[in-house]
Image (cartoon, rainbow, N blue to C red):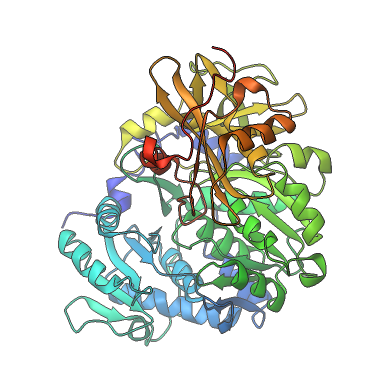
Length: 575
């Protein structure tokens, strides 16, 4: 019988050694011989935690209001994970098979993630809000054998969605339903029934050089890309960032608020994996709201939270979010989107904790970050420094490195980097240079002292009359306006100049904001007149991804003359 597993389709070891991947034999040998790659699979995190702190709380489920509805110790997590492992094995899952997971944030996620990886299977997350088209594509690309879903999400009927997606993907042999009854149809099983079995006493020996995680990312293509991660690349990512921060920076022990959806890489890396590696507690918030988030911080004595700037901005807007209200909070990290520069000092003052800027993506977790050891003023003005074994450089369009202080395309390299895009050697070849540097798609400046400052996505650049408009700098200033809650700057096509900068804002109170008013505010903040926005749109809510990133492609599609409050002003720079 043909092997239809992801490992087989990746052509291992060919995929890893160059036939569709970015790793050559010499690089693999270097990572192993130097100790950058450890000879350990991800399941070892849970093995060590249950030996060291079996009665410590490993995971907590909070409902959408922030109320605790379930918790489990490391001994209980170990037992449930072994039952998941045994149940999947009974369903025919073997090493290299993909198990996709589409559930809300909950304590069971840790057990499912470790059940999959302990079996040697491949974990792949699907965001809970995705529709049939995206789900069907991701199941097909991952060659999913078993799909975990929640019974429902509000009015979203996930059972029917899974039924349709499975009809389009006959390779999905079973669907496991969490939090409700499973249909009485062949191939469907409830989560409780799956784990109603004897846990595996002897877990399989898992090869750490094999694929552990398929992280889907939309990037700039019209289809989701499946970034392939090994146990060793994920292990590098999850180990090196806490080491960069220093002992105790995340709390001792860590109590980690997991508010980013677990279907994204953030929930997998910094929720299930890092919390267990550090033998802390993962506090899973079912659905984000500022009020539920603040309640979680208070009642769970949260010491750390990792998520996009949107989550932090939401918390800061609440009147009860003060240092005395969250005394346990030690560190907030805000990767995933450009950071308004005023946000870091404001949050530090208001919450009384360390606020750490950082940069990361599915392909490399967190590769650039601040830390308690770095000067505070540099963390307020930059995104930090490359961490651990991650290398970073800035290049021109021809991949030639640029001098310090010159803006260009950010490229990274290191043992935590993904190994390629599954089934798309063309995407992989486009993403990597000949010597293994990954083209991140971000623009940045690296100063002489090694600090990195992100300036936006390559595709987000607005070029007006041949001059680059500093999009992120303008957005940071817009966030300083007392009435603005969200802001984005996009390029609107212009026949003469190519593009003009257009501001899109959401306001604290309903209404609109005039272009003259926002331009006067930006001038008062010191923005050059030639970079002033030439149009403005006020929206009640700016469209975002589930992880809080603004959907600029969607914003551009929304822009039309009748959608704007004002559409044009005089040339700001006289071009």
